[in-house]
Length: 183
Ligand code: NI
Image (cartoon, rainbow, N blue to C red):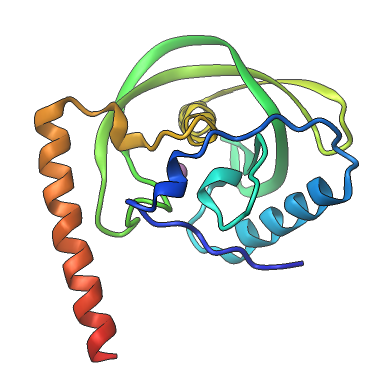
């Protein structure tokens, strides 16, 4: 298993549109899945990761996330989602969002997302599944599917707000490069 690097905005690879998985049992796909699970497990404060935000040569339509019951958030299960499609959403929420690929400790912005999201997908065995989640996971599903379509959350911002966030990112990048120089 390999720990994968998480791409950082504005890495152009974040715009990659993932190819659908043809065969969940193909060796390349199985390796991708186990590397993604390992990366999820070893990345602190990370709820989910999409193939297109990781250092993978030919990312496929796969995301991994921690599933949990809101009644017992401590107990969480890593899940693999393949070729996901949103089949239903309900309601909307406007809440702060961040991303492991958009300078996670520095950049957050309010984004409108569904209150409930239902997706259909394949699991790691290739079996069809349908998942409906509310709260954080309802937002996570659409956030990860955006990644697989080459989008990051700040792409949803209106131009003026986006400009402000881009300015902030420039400052963060400058700060990071200074820190690297001094390290
Ligand atoms: Ni993200």
